[in-house]
Length: 126
Image (cartoon, rainbow, N blue to C red; front, side):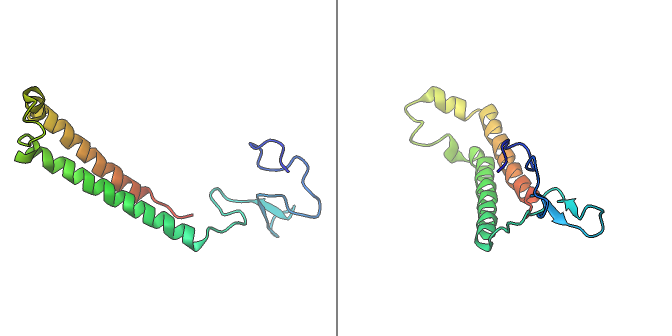
């Protein structure tokens, strides 16, 4: 067992076994070579876990894109400022219908779409 969780190898590797984190390599002199960064070390990701990750990323991208498009379009429609919730509050209605508030909400929508597509582009399977 490893005493320090930050150390990748035990302090005294067994002579007959290859140390954890290495694979057998007949080309090198010592018979072992360290694993490449990001390589799977003996444990495979199950198919169900892989598909759950794929579906999760797909749903996240879909949610971000849908919410972003709604935030870009909705402030410029008449329903944004002419709704029954804002009728008793004329000061809030004036603030919400200003161009600044509409621009901020549209910018948040663009940011949301960007985040969704950035996640889709950056998705990698191990």
